[in-house]
Image 1: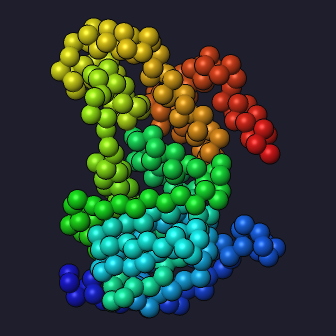
Image 2 (image 1 turned 90 degrees about the vertical axis):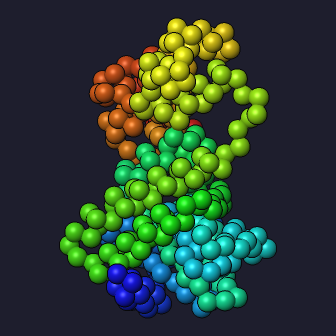
Image 3 (image 1 turned 45 degrees about the vertical axis):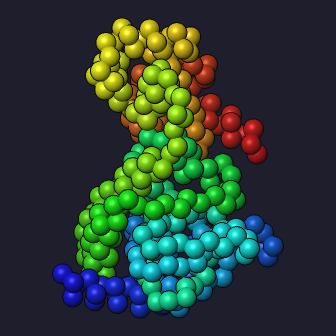
Length: 319
């Protein structure tokens, strides 16, 4: 396995040097100037890149895809938004970038490797976003480029369990270096597992209020599990009786469990409708509705408009 991995790393490192980057054809001075286009094949949804950090010095640019750049070995410097915003990504850390956010790899003082997991934007929303939706802040980070292309936000993560991440990356490197007809089908569940690891680590790094009440903890848990939570589940998770859960929620927030859950789901529905091109059926499923008819009914009652009608009106208001 070690020999196979070394050969795969060597091959992808050489391939990375040969990438002929294409850019959006826009007027000079446009915010989209120097925006890199998807470097993989059109039918590829996930791409694995390996770069020698010491030899890689990029021109500051933007890109039209999501990327997860791991400091696989050694440290490397990255530039975010402006050249004076330089940060060091240490071994075991990951830099997560949005489409159109400014970025550049700016080399390293010692030999190291950067492993990049690149995902086409449409594929990301359809196949991977749901794995990152438990945390509302993380969820909005990945949707932000759809409403604010030049947000220049990024996430930097250090993993508590680098072994699992390395094992996943190793398998993805070997698979992508030896591509076959079913490589994309094999890479996608690996990438999904990687996204779930990202979401888990992000939640670990979230600082919770020390004086959080039981009712607040319950509502936060609901917000992390909007797609599958029930009053019975909540009661079992917190070792409370369902009636007690209902009572403390109403006392604290003046709303019932169902009303709070509906609000949480509708807030996410609004973001998904305005921030993605996902079909209504997929959005309904992501939010925990057993069928799109129930979602349509709930949405219309809440917003007094049909989902697509509401989204179109919002987009017109932004133009």
